Image (tube, rainbow, N blue to C red; front, side):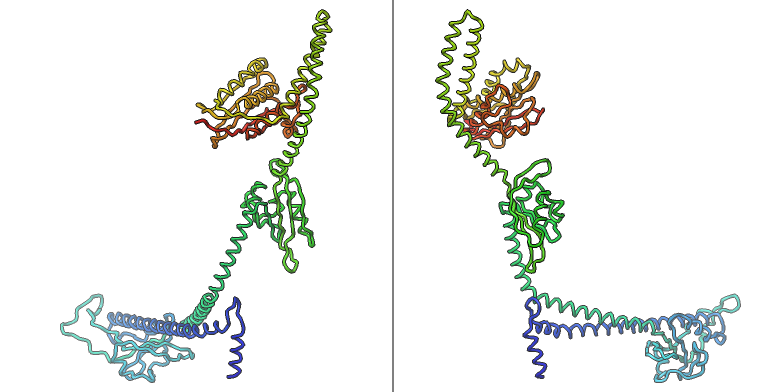
Length: 589
């Protein structure tokens, strides 16, 4: 006993997986084992009862069939001429019949499927005389001649009944009134059924019952074990769910792109910023090899950090995307490994530098503009005074040498060049000064019509068609009409100069979802702007025209920016250009 309790104590001190003690599981087995053992025994007992009932019914059916056959045979001949032994021998040839025996009330065999036993005594251990008086089916299990078990069904043998006539020759005649056959002596019929197949089926049923009982026992044991583990599992699952939800929320809402690969270098994580920057939905990327799902420039960084002992990588690069677009990225990449140093995957963090580079470019441009503006303000004042003197002397010499046509023409050219230089200085001064905006109510459709009227003569001279499209019943808005007209006039003149004959110049006002903003587009069908020039067209002194100053678009850019709007351009060589003005306004209605 002391040894038993020491074993129990060791079991109590031992912990099962997930924190469940083994003694709890042993208690579950102790409760479930008697229950399922009782159920298994009950099933086996029911199977035996069913088999016995089935064999009794089968034996009874054979007895009734044998009696009916005997009765039919007796209807066609004299009673002493019927051969009972022959019918019994033929009937015993049926499958699963071990023997057929008919005895009298003393147990003497009258007919037997085994002819050698006819005349011997049968029914040892039975009160054959009592059985010969009862119509109730009874059964017992005996041993056959070959030592196998035989299921034997027996009862009183009653082959005759009240016959309706007797065959005599070729006709049928009725028996005389009151005629009765003499009573038959009491007899007993024994039907032995072979139990070989039944025993095999019983053994199979027993094994099946034991197997099902064992399965149910294991199922019950597993059920109790699962119930005991449920609380721990539920707590662990809730903690895991909260941690996963938190990490997923962090990953999805972090302001930088995140791509993570697994040990097979397949994409495992792809957050929303990565979708937006790389223009690829996560559904089409996650699970695919990173070499196919990611741009080549990013895949090369993952390969670089996947090597053992690879250092964390930080750099800036230009990442080409499908469609020819290139985006600048600031990336950081690293290798993921477990405590043993086994490779688990790689992680790649990146940030789109497009806006930052645009801001850097804008800051540099503004710094240059400030410098140019200060220089222009100083230079313009210094240039204008000498220009006035030069123009005065040129005018004097033109008047003095009016009679000398060549000298007068030279003086006129000098005056024209001074005027042109004076206009350039004026534009330079305008560009260097802060732009002042004076909003007032204005009808945009009338302002556009007035601007188009100012360039009608230049358009007519080149055969250019000017088209104006805008929504009907445009309301009054508040903006600086003079400044906007200056911008439109510059864009219209540039468009006419960029087109050959029979071109089309279009001014279109589009409705926007935001009623507080105007969307004005000026399009031409000219030669377009080269891609390398698009980034510089709003810079001062940048021009592709031989006689241009390069200040017109720079001034227009300053005016629109001062209004709080934005001016952009869309163009391709040979496909014309479209300048888009997005200006915030305040409706007067």
